[in-house]
Length: 323
Image 1: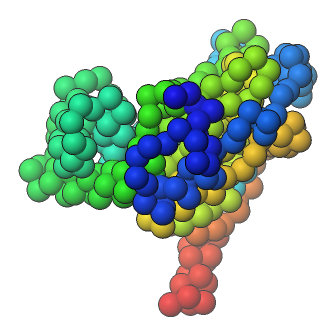
Image 2 (image 1 turned 180 degrees about the horizontal axis):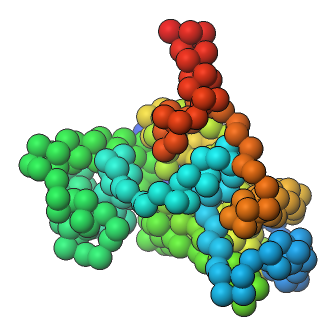
């Protein structure tokens, strides 16, 4: 059974729940509905990125490297003051981040797991793997109390159980890959674009798209979730030369999939957003201008909230309007 069988009514013998079947129906596509793309698309995207960013790169010292990911792009397109504050603050993992890492590791283990899938057992194996590995979350796990680890396991089990109940079982023939990393370097390595997709399925065939990029989400929909996946699609295209066929955010709490087809127009608008974002990053990092403050609900997580009048006023007004 190949990935082409990930289509309605084809090649799936397991009895699926309605939620699992709905995901399969939304993700599947036969060979006649898989788009093909120009052979030179990869080179075109790279050339346009470098042309659009060349003036900004000249602002940087010759030995400085700029690293860009989805989080930084979202920050700089939101509140620029928060972007600068987080650039200066050291990275500190929190419980929600590590729960996500553990759940994703459990999904990865489940792909080749022999025997019955028991969420608590897979999560325990995932925790053990991370605790004794070289992950950024290793120190976090090793420093938790027994109570904190129990709470973490409970949250991770719930997340993995929800995924296994509502998402169709991952067949090895679909080429599932968890936490798939992509890196694109421009300007001789002075600009590095990085992405990490929660789950990928399928692969391209020649110039014909076949891969699906999936991000697993908790909570409700935000428009930035679409921007994240589009950024991943751009990186995937620049790495492989063929875009993914489809993007999808999967919301664990609701058991709902939000899919989006990849087109050249989508890649064009994504590239324009990336260029604008990186230009702003470089302007701010080189003190070319003052950061623009754009208060929003995200102010509650900002490291400079205690000294930001605009953010405090926004949150106070939001609380008064929505007590």
